[in-house]
Image (tube, rainbow, N blue to C red):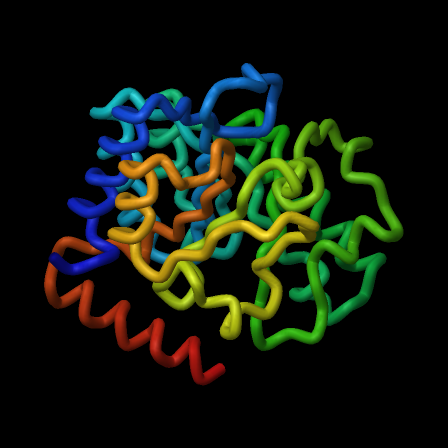
Length: 244
């Protein structure tokens, strides 16, 4: 079976639920003894794919967080509203320091404007930094100088989750062990978590009871396609990501 399809994603949701994992949209107060997954989606492109994945989750009674950029190709209020109407959480996938080439004053002004634009669609209280592999700047550096909490933000996905407790997995480069191709999408953790190559590996670990008790997983919807043409196209994009 091909990996990174909506069918395979549904298989993963099935097995997580069957094995007693609670799926949450954020790192709020949860039962410390319960198996759980913080489920996050970064919308970097193709919002229609985000809507398709959100519908899959909705049918399964799953609620997650969806972080949107405010660039014209991803900021589609009608899509955001449809996803929010299913009970999902909407957040801001900010890239303001990179957009402004490291200029902190322009970056925070841009952050304020973009956050307000997104809040015209949904009452955003969560944010998540975008990681541009071609930039020498990390958008997280913005908070070395400013405080996002003064903007009514309760959670930043990289800064407000304890990754010593939650294993972090991201589908960067359309693989789960793409760490060598990953410039910014990584977290600080002193725990040596198990690594997986494919979604099938993760499913097997969940079934065998070896998957971490708590995790935070990041899925980019544009990487997950049932359509063979789209799937092949995204595979080629992923190979380009590996080459930088």
